[in-house]
Image (cartoon, rainbow, N blue to C red; front, side, top):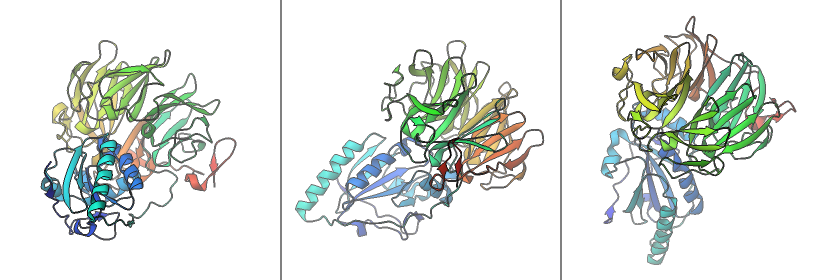
Length: 509
């Protein structure tokens, strides 16, 4: 592309992770990457490890600035972006792009896009999409070499004033939750602490699985490592818990009797193949598995990064695409036509699999007993058709729904960016709000005044609906008989760095 002078960054917009606005003029002598992202986009999250790698490799010559150009209405708020920065451990400055003004100045067309600015302030290249680490690494190295020769390079390490960190909490950004009434167990994906917490339904601590630092390590409960675990599925007959280990792009198996962790699918690295494929589970790379459901001897997987639903045969160890072309969209039909948009939640009722399709803000269903057929139960079925409206079928509006569960002939939805819990009748397509004021916050009480903050995972046990209230760092529960909301108190649970582990796996301060 022809080199053009990079438009200056606005000084009067909101900046995070820095104590003062930055200007491109002040960064002359350095290579600058502008990362245009929105935090609900899985593809945007996938490039964060690449940016960390480049920042670590070129600390004296490279500055990364995140330009947060929000897709969803909720993502336009400053605090939601700040929470995302904390959740995803982002260390570079982030500029809140008001109404796509910077996006338009740089003629950006898609998330994520990275603009490359040379040490003299010219845009010299850009890339869209993920998997571009090698290209960027090579380009940065060439720019450093070129401007070193020209004498226009000014190497210097820069440090940023980070957003205020969260106080240590017992749970950190819990993503998913799973209840089992028969064994009185509540399984919690303590996503921000990279571990699984197991309690009774009333909150009595039973086990902590994982040391609490990100990694991929099998072994005993007190030595295993996870990285941002999400959805779970429980095999009661074998006392086994399956975990979607999202940042490790792997499926883990927890033996609750032997208290061991084993990787059963994935290679620990993200797949770049979005076309339907499969093979031996331990030889096939996965892409951000986000939720799980057991169906007979299959483990069904919401493969958010591939926009597909996968199946793992627990008998022969084969894994592969079940439904979804790999294109990001909301297309109904059979397995050869259907398309999803970042499926992030699964629920099963008889032979019907329900899918929370987050980027299309829709609830989809798949009939599993015949040739898989996909249809949209509620929501617009459009990538930009979101909002907050109860109703029937296509008239319903959700906003980036991440969680779903099925019980009592109904489907319960975590309407994440609307901070609400909704109820869908899958036969009629009628969807109604049942809890949450719609304003982000933390308040117990009647369903009309209760507040959530980006609720994610859902699960039902008896008359209780449990909610992973992600940005409040707690588990909530709703009495479905009285529609009263309360917070589950987990006694003796502490953050990983404040815990030591007893032989029974319970962490104590």
